[in-house]
Length: 259
Image: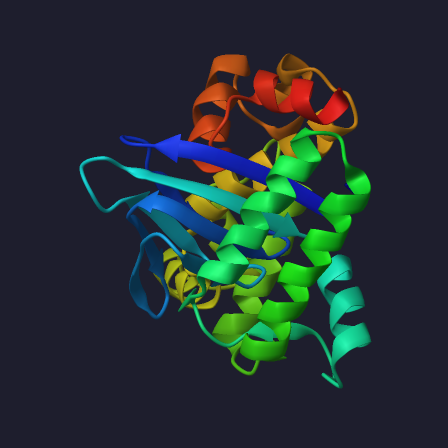
């Protein structure tokens, strides 16, 4: 389905490290407890709950009960959310969710039905149910997404550091080298980067590498080629980080995405 990724899973011991997504997360917990670590605090979501995460928001996830948790998750792109928001509301600018979690068994059930329809190859039903769920969440729990500003020299330096790491992903500089290039100290850069992006540069870089690897796998690149292209030492290195952040190994992800 264009503009959408789907993940349905049962996790017990798996814990997602701090990471962020290019698009949105709309996750329906169907069994057990999921604990989501967000900038605003820890969210414990149980059956009938829907977790809502905006783009580029750093977060973690793990089981909050011995039996783990089951969930059906939608990962809609920014363009898909903007399209639905434009049709149902007068929101100006980029829409964003104003809450992290809601108790909404009806929407949770609809999200599960999106997955079932997609797995059955019923694109018409899946797209209809998807837009129903997204429209409901936007109408009830969304507002304009605040624009990030770079008001301080530290924030501007963090943005420049991120751009440098993205450009030199396969062969990144050390923290000391990066700070010297930007005319600041390693500690000051580290502090500014964490404040702006919610994670230190090395954690952000690993997350960015996995995101780029996903794009390459979507285009048909093999896991081994993707690993080297984004700066991992080899395919096992990619496998480890990809599985931790995405929740499935890169080979399985590629098979599902390329059919």
